[in-house]
Structures are given as C-alpha cells and as structure tokens.
Image 1 (cartoon, one colour):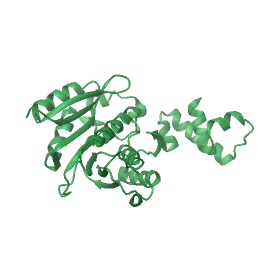
Image 2 (cartoon, one colour):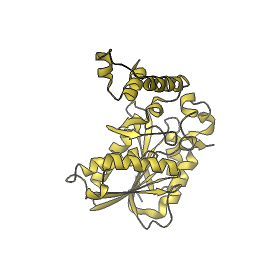
Image 3 (cartoon, rainbow, N blue to C red):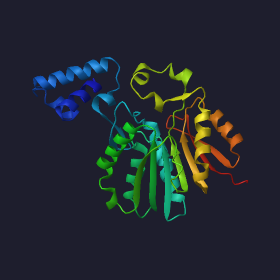
Image 4 (cartoon, rainbow, N blue to C red):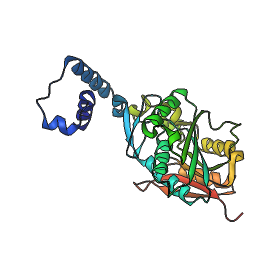
Length: 278
C-alpha cells in the first residue's frame, strides 16, 4: 500500500495525504498507463527508488538511476562522522577526497551542512571521483539541484573527477578521505536479493574475491596524496569489517583503526587515523 501511494503520488504530482483525502481525484488515460507501467516494473522487483527516479538521503531528495547505487539510510552516519572530523581539523581550508561518489549523496550532504554553518566549519574543498561517467553526470545534476550556484557559497567548493580512485596529477594533499566502496565478495553478491542484484550497478557492490583488496588498494593509491594527519572514513560490511580492519592494521601500522557501529548496532564504518604510538 505505501509503495502504491508513492507511485500514485509520483504520477499525479501530489502527496500521499492528498490522495487519501481526495478519492474523487480523476486519473487521465496517459497517467493510468504510466501507473500500470510502474506497477509492472515493481512487480518485477525493480526498486521503488528507480521507479520514482529519486531517493531521500540526509533530508535531501537525490536523483537516482540504474547507474548509481541507491543511497542507504545507514550511510548517513558516514556524513555525520565526516562533519565531526571536519569540525575538529585545525586548518583554515580542508581538502577532502570522496572515492566512488555515485549519485553524489555523501559529498553534497556534507557540503550543504557546511555551507549552512560557516561559523562552525572552515572552508572545504571537496573532490569527488567515480569510475562511471554516467554516475558522475547524475551527481552533477544533484549538485546543481541541491547546492545551486556553488560559486556563491564562499566556504565550499566541489569538483567531480572521472577516475577509478584518484588522478595522479591532482596536486592536492588531502586531510580527509571518504569512501563507501564495493564491499560485498562475489560469492555473497550472487546470493543478494534479486531487486538488488538485477537492478543496482554491480560495479558499486561487487568487491571481487575478497573485499580486503579494495581497501588495500584505496590506501595504497591515495598514500602519496595525503597530509600527515589525514583521516580515512570508510564504510564496510558487518560480516567482514573486523577482519578487514585487522588486515589493514597489519599492513598499514602507521594507522590507528576504530570500528564504528550503525544505528542497528552492526559494525559498519572504519575510521583510520594517524597512529599516536609511532
């Protein structure tokens, strides 16, 4: 019922309350055909967010399509953690890198919060990369919709770059690196719900044989682009994040690793900070 109301609201360009309180509302033939089409796609297990073309994240409506992962509520904590970290970094200008931006939901949410609190936060320059040109195109649309003319916001700057992880000639040393990378091993990916496996981009989910290689490569590729005090905040899967953290601690002893739980008390995030014992 809620999904049907969402579809009706989308086609009729109204809210669910109006639909329930005005049952006499007439539906045109073209609208009826569109509703039937969306219901058929929903019956085939296509996610509601793709049917509607948007999903809410951090109180913003983000455009989404088959080229971008659907933003999950638990990832909002990554935004919170990032804002906390930005607030404590003692620099007048903070350089941030987000790897795998997708729809741009993380980067845009962070920058919107910062731009609305110029007394609380320093100036932030954020570079967001993605390997998918079509994902980047949608992220740029979201940035324009939600941030408007960013040049008029004096304390934030956002740049999108087409790259696997990072471009070698950026010339920037980062204070904070963020990522919600592909973290589901292939053998587990094959067991995912059809609504995820069939419709969401595999490149944003499938980490290959073991997820640890994704995180190792991320740290190795960005190491020469970081300041000494650089912090990483990375999302991961509850079933693997402890083992990944142990492996990273062994291979990158210069980093102290903290594991942070999501709202359901599942291990979800890693914060990698400079090791104070070195």
